[in-house]
Length: 374
Image 1: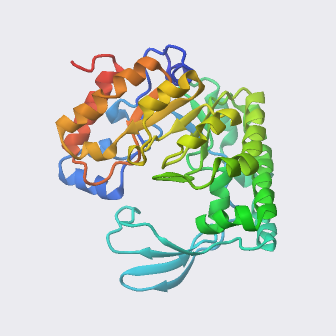
Image 2: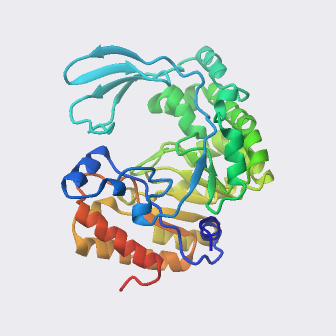
């Protein structure tokens, strides 16, 4: 079975030879720790999403149609001290960021966001000029060669890279979480206009790729939930977001894309019925600290929703006994149920030792091969 067939059959509940071996990656601090503990660079370097050979990961490829702002805002440093920096990034967001403890681009804490590009309808109208779907720069310079190469591939292709777009997440980038939360009630016309524009732009920008390449799946990046639930009610989701998911997903399906996944940390459980109504078929990473239980969710939704992730990163720091309990307590039964790909429920933090991660990866591989007790 090819890697392409394996992923498609897994996510459509169609009896693969085994589920794919995927992982999400590491914190920069984890990378540095593992080097000191003897990890070879080839185990750490490269595209974790694409698939590292060292870990015998299944390969997947991401066709990079750029759905971000073009041109981006000019980067500007507004203030800098020994401890922090205030800057405007390419999305027009003004950050205050802690410099101390940053390793390989991973900060030890989240930035403080001071200002965003959209505060008024006029700001949004100006921002829309950066979202021209016909801009040739949205496609790689070697796009024609990529199309030709992909005609004979045996691995799956996802349309766009991870974190490419989301109906909620684009608006959050433009306005900020707090401002967007208020705008659902205080500026509903603006939010409707933004979300409609996102759908229009996405469909127009992706048309060329979908005509040229047989795409296997598409993913929304949203991150619209926290530990106790989503950042909007189901009623708000239904009014503002559901129609645009349905429109984009109908467009994708008209081009043969039947696997459509959604990435959100936090607890999204009350929204899953709306995901299904929207035409979304898979959800990840099932964050255990937010009480997302993939065993329960798999039983509840059956073949209506595939799940990915769900391995508690906190348990990997505790030792082999905790890893055994975490992996063996859920992965074999989820694999038997189908529609599941096991991996850590986010990037691996630095409290996980190299020894523990190697043990986890070996145990997961045995589960994938149907021999968890070997």
